[in-house]
Length: 337
Image 1 (cartoon, rainbow, N blue to C red):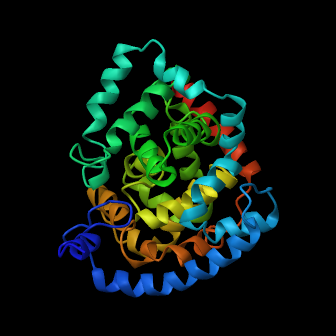
Image 2 (image 1 turned 60 degrees about the vertical axis):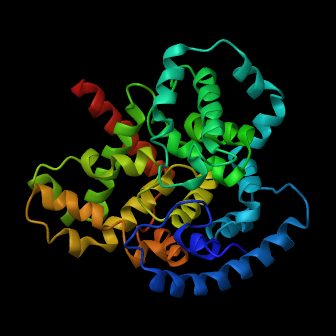
């Protein structure tokens, strides 16, 4: 072993992200040694469930298993199956490669190229000097997707999502179909030029906070802080670069199975758990700063307990409620022009 590889392993997490200078190794180690026990137990359960097969049927048991986390070695497979991406890929053989070989929209290609070096500058696998360099894979996935879904094309945020998919699947075509599942089905209209779905869901969160954490809603209103200012990146990047990697992946496990309401569960849990802290804010910049703070620290690092919390803390949250709120919020936004 080269003498610096242990150091490198330490400075860089298993996904290739460099740890920040102020990274708290001691508390992370304490958490991870406990989490390792959970991971080992879950891995055994998943092996029994899959029995060496590459297929799975949706069921309450599978949903329960997914909420407790998919082992990394099965993550790509399970995401592909439960999101419908696998079926789409099998029904459209060769489609992805035809997109890459077809005519290109120069403007789209240029926009994607511009964002390449801005995507995960802190990840060693995305550096130009890396071998293999994932920038090339990322470029292909985004160019193919932009030509597949012309209504969306490319917008910032998609590069981070595609990047995570590539890190997990290690497969270009699977990443493309998972991106399609997210943007085409799971996240309603987040990335279209008008971003109507994104704007709507930020308002929906505001309404849910009024119902479930009214004191925080009242604080926001009193100081004239619009929700989009503090949570837009939560929605656009699906918590990438906001919460720790392991926690983001656990959230995505549920997102692929249960859909977009998971985003509201996570957001409400962060807000409700830190209600007293947020309420200490006395002005506009203070509130914005508190919202940055609540996405850091042990509460979000301890992904296993965090995930248990998102299903208890916000209380009941039905898709019916969310759909109704989406309808009224959307109408309100449209009437405002």
